[in-house]
Image (tube, rainbow over the protein chains, first blue to last red):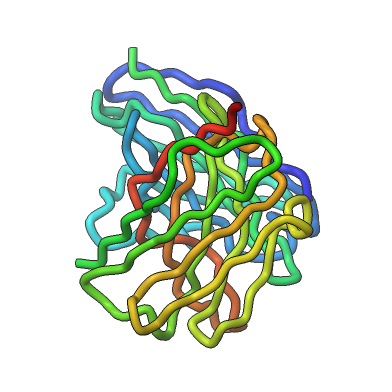
Length: 110
Length: 122
């Protein structure tokens, strides 16, 4: 059970869009539509922003969207805002009642 | 609003057992999965394992031989024990809640505790 692969960092200017990828295998990301994304500000608990690949919990702005193609899931943040600067983690069901996280991506809003 | 709060020693001696408790308030422990997730300083998240309110458990294969998660429904708490710790187990330990999926397993985490830093050092 290896961690999912995410870019270490991404950046964008206010108003722009950024996409964070999350690559796994057919045993996790590619095998199930159970990918979730978490936003974590420094010193805070992670907060779910996407679940079941593309669903948004109540209260999460529609600027956040998720998708999946094959073994790679993606989180897109459009209309970047300063408060979006945070760490982002993907997570996937990995079969046999287990879950696996990505290594995390630091988003910098320039 | 459901709240989760971790508690336990912040310093553990190498080779000893790390013990943490998560207290759930604002909701029942029933009908959900309850997980422990850790985050070494400056690193990513690692799922440790979960317990279902029925008492069934499952653990990360990489930690399975050292982990025990238990539940105390009367206190609305669940606990983590990690044995034979080394400095590599130094991390912020979070507890978190999951809804069951249609297949009857946890698939994401909707409520998290703030986390508690546990340092393994002599």
